[in-house]
Length: 262
Image 1 (cartoon, one colour):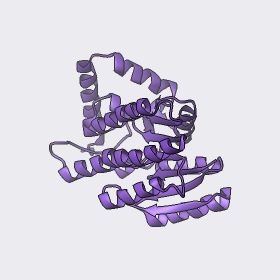
Image 2 (cartoon, helix red, strand yellow; image 1 turned 90 degrees about the vertical axis):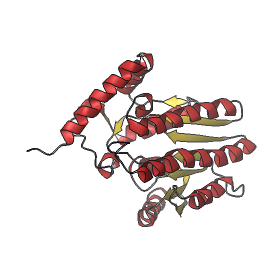
Image 3 (cartoon, one colour; image 1 turned 120 degrees about the vertical axis):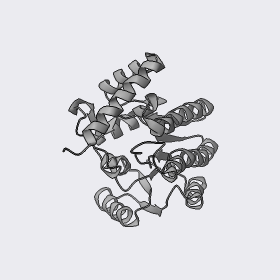
């Protein structure tokens, strides 16, 4: 089944991708900042699925550490057949009132690292004539939800461009664009999501299996669930002024829901 490298593998979607791939017989290279969690996951996957695991503790906002992961992807003696660029985090609050360092870190982790690791993987995979790159984007990239939307819009369009360039090489690039997923993502960002309807929540396994199925099918953009397929289709057809207005209203509702009661 080959080897898959998963970034942000210690929790959330990254962990779910690692478990699913191990269950299918893939060996794993697990990348995240949390060394303890990585080692625990590696041991669990080895014990449960009898696969080989390797851990790389790396902060992808650090250029030297990101380059170490890129070097692993370039290593022809230990080929990686599937790259899953999953590492990321939510941005909470106002761009103009927030900490610029947080915004820069978001760009380093969710834009620059995706660029660097995709370049390393695509070059090595193209030379072998096979492989896959799965970039975790978001439905937010079609909407207007602060700089996070801009970041995820870049991930989706970048993946589309990469897919075009890799056509006919045996290497597939896919962007998965989930909506709201039951993981630690929003809790870590200290986002109050209590006002969100149950119908808009996705199970993590639904996202993972759908993304891998679409990657195997050669689809460039994967949107899990009929609900979010309809949402993204509507956003793409709507005038941008309308999209901005709806996004502003939703952001106001979320801010109101997050205020403490008197």
